[in-house]
Image 1 (spheres, rainbow, N blue to C red):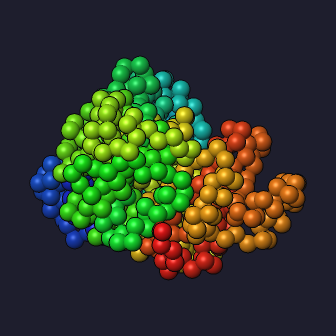
Image 2: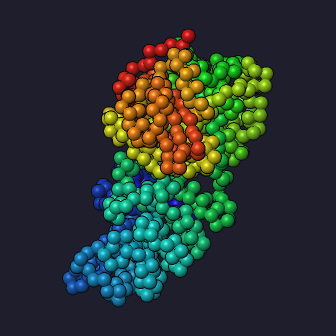
Length: 627
């Protein structure tokens, strides 16, 4: 299947769009009529530019409101088509997409529509051109690809075929199984789009909320698998209408589009039991995080780690790098080196998480998958923590994701660090729970695709979080065992704390690390004794909490005394949260406790937490130094 993308999917001028499409590795593109009309490129210029860029022009689209007309209106429709044929021949494509009519004046008479396409197909054939008919989800008379298939069959010309569009069909809940009855030779083009599941007008849903495959909730993998099953081998072309994409960088969107098609095709092949074209998505476990601390002259990061309850268990044998540990598989690396990747990261962003290490079954396969998906791979970073080559992929904010397997992890810490404990194990009660990242609003879906295409992660229901300065969009991604959990948060408004983080951090990055304990009250006492600045929660919250959950008064008083937030799900699962104040106006820690299989992230508490952070003056640094 040929990879293609419609120019309407990207921002910029037509030339800029085509250059971004070619740079992303596409070999074909659809030319959207409005892009061409607004361009200063002639049709011949366009053909030459696409040839220069190595792009095939798979279709010119759309030709609207053609069928079912009579009298002068019908004559004018065919005259319009002839002019489009002239244009197509000059620009170098042989296919015209005709979308189903929305005109009130048009007739829905089936026989008349067949006759119109028969005549149009004959005219196109004399020029060596083809016609592809598409059912718009909101078409007045034709809004189902099964009807289009019948019309194409009755037209009976090799120059007339159909366009299948995943959004138009799946948004109307037309069964994927309906593709089994379509002759693949009659399918001239397949357009792909995903979308979040929403209950709204189809036209508005389509025009504003489409997204790349695997960024939404439609069964696009099953759709492509069904096409493979019937033997379709033509183009898969992205046609995405999305306000966020129109505001984003064309190069980023084009790269996302190519990544989505690669992952989608691999997923569909696996669904059919044929094996994938890439190494499989890895189950993953967060095994370490690395802080850039070269600018941390007062040792605030180390002091906070100690106050929270982690232990310093090792010092690197050759570099200014310390190893801290919670539980057996919870490692925190504090990198104080100025001349290192961590040091460069710190100069750009300040103190914060510059890398994470993820345990995978096979580090080479994980890196191969990342590279095939267009991710930037560093094969052997200069300050690698191992004698083994540990590949790393560029991730959010320029940070790294290291891929570690059992071979790389075997004796890693003991080999690289002078350990305080002979066996390298400190008995701690803190474990990684999740990482929270702030990402640019126009890159939000890009990062959803990044993580979900790379690892075996499930995207949870997207939620809106209320900040005193606006709304924050949030989505969690997690694997079934909870060994890798990430939350992505993006805000459009400039007054939210997320937006302030982004401006201060100079881009996307990890805003906080959540560590899990089995006894949050003991952890709270420990942090209080260490003098760690804790985020203060308003008394009103605890009064409401008692009424909302009918909690015992003494229990609520205990929560309030330690500034612990609480949530309970419908199944009786309980969640406890406590937050530190921020380092360097940006990064903070969260300690959580999960009871009775609670699997969420305390979204109901987020407005309270964000308001408390604003009230605490998070724009200024914490007034605390470790002893």
